[in-house]
Image (tube, rainbow over all chains, first blue to last red; front, side):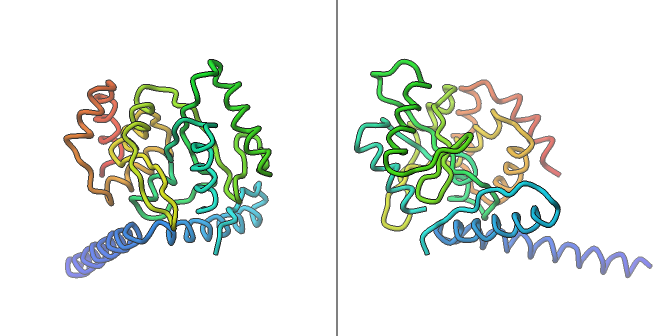
Length: 64
Length: 170
């Protein structure tokens, strides 16, 4: 049982490390790329809003 | 968004505004991972000829409407991006605008608040979304802690800052 808990803790720590590393990679992207990601997030968020009957929010129209 | 920034720079050149600086979530994006937001917060200072900020904001809206921008409830869509123009309302925001730095976006220079001031403004506002952003921001952005400390002290935010840190740190 102890071995299982240790393995689970190690797995959780590894996942958190990977998540942190991913966040730092995203933070280091050029701002133009971050804005493109932001627009994709706005679209996804509106898809969920539409499916749950909530008001749509503006999606930015940015240059390609 | 480059076209939106071009318009902001043009507004300054045309004397509609004296100065501007990006704040809020989009300014934070210059330093941290992408987070969702739906408007661009632009802090502005207005020409001294007008004493009433509401009247002057009307001038800003009139200028932009003349360029085909569409006003909404709290914002105005400038080249596809809803922009919320905010007149500096506290000494901290005024100082943050003065200390903002020039950054590059495509071919345009854009004035963006520095991370230490963004943190101080989030602490001053202290809404749930500010605390959520702060938790992410602090984990990803290298701050000049001495500078941040001075800002917080100058604006009487030290105690509030300690309370926020206690609440957001695991």
